[in-house]
Length: 402
Image (tube, rainbow, N blue to C red; front, side):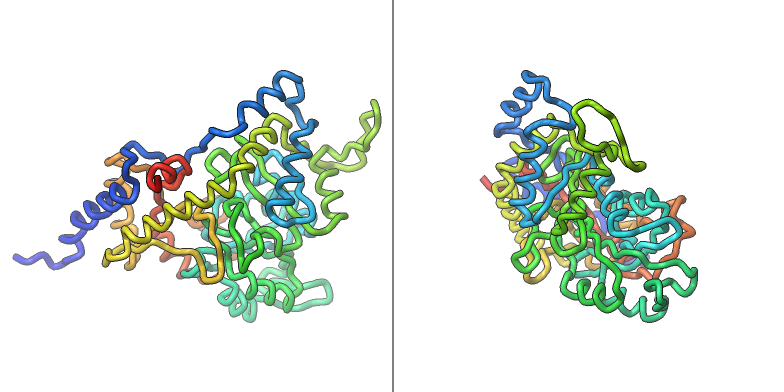
């Protein structure tokens, strides 16, 4: 009797082909291959050893200042304030943008949990919106249509007419290094008077029409976790063009301590969110090689593009038009979404020694956020059911493109 579901017949061949494509793209590297691991072959040990030898390992030291200077120079931002994590950076950025308790912040449902957690740390509520097929990030066109239904203009800003809470900010996340449609988002922000705070955690080295991500919003947040393109072990940074916001960011991430030779006087409730000098030293050495890292990761992306170009079931997501992506994590996407087939690809690849992963569980489906406001998110759901992130570390990229 003929199988009534031809897709079931094809699935084993699809998983075999998927693994074969990974082997082809990543040669001469051999499994096991990690998703994204750091590479330390520059000045990391020299700079870190200096911190240890001199004793300057905490939140004060020359490398903190130097790391901030280099970040500002690299991104084209007027100011960069180093923090202990990307979550800390986004939390403070939202506070400085005016987000307060009992307000709402518009965030993509398809994002890492830190995006929503940072909103919660402000006492506010994340309000989940849809993503774009083209960028995998927040879709400003869908958001504009949605705000036409849910937003209400008042003398005290734009409110969600269903909850009565002010819509305090929009947080686009440049997913996997691909910039969102910033022109459309800036137009939306202007029309509604809602500030943008960029979650640029994954997009260091990515450009939108020649300008670095993280420099379009009122503020933005970067991450330097161990799996990012540049790492400080654990850390983040706030970017802003505003001198007063930068001063405030540095003050409240340093426990709001007023400068004095010996007195400890703090003038407001604040946070101990500064990046230690020893981590900043690691970051300085990593930043020296950012251009090289982006170059080899883009070359690996080209290999993936070519390898999957003739596959009728899976394609590799390329950078949006007019953008220069760091391709932090490569994205293979099923042409027809299927969570079941996606999971079979994940199982087959991991069994073969290729550490691939799915995109995050949609934030509105997590237990602590299941009762938060949410727009219609059909694209985000399709992306979640069809995306597999591919090995994209610099070390394996260098091997594959040698």
